[in-house]
Length: 118
Ligand SMILES: [Zn+2]
Ligand SMILES: [Zn+2]
Image (cartoon, rainbow, N blue to C red; front, side):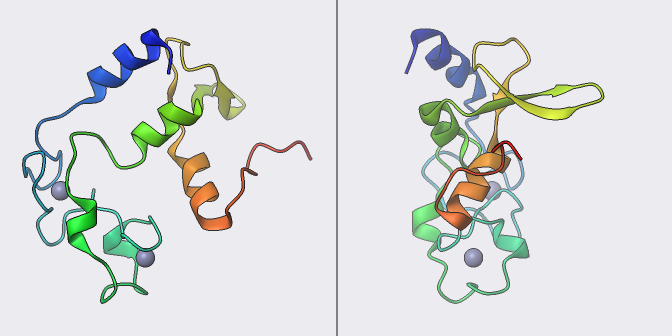
């Protein structure tokens, strides 16, 4: 990862989960809406399928919003462009944010697809 991106990622670090407030290394509290399902990677609260299979030890708060680090590793960023919506962009763009939608698609379908030309 580029040094400039590493710096940017460091700024995303949060000692406590922004929703349930647990510290790094702790399991999220029940009903935390940041916690992801350990099976499908979707939001745990809205996942009906894996409530029993979910392993909360695997999804402890690690200081970063779930998926953000993966987006940085992959270089997946997007920014809002008026009239166009979210478009992929370089991570060094000042308005770039980690493209979590792209990552979610990748996790569900096993391929990168949402930005394919039609
Ligand atoms: Zn939490
Ligand atoms: Zn799930």
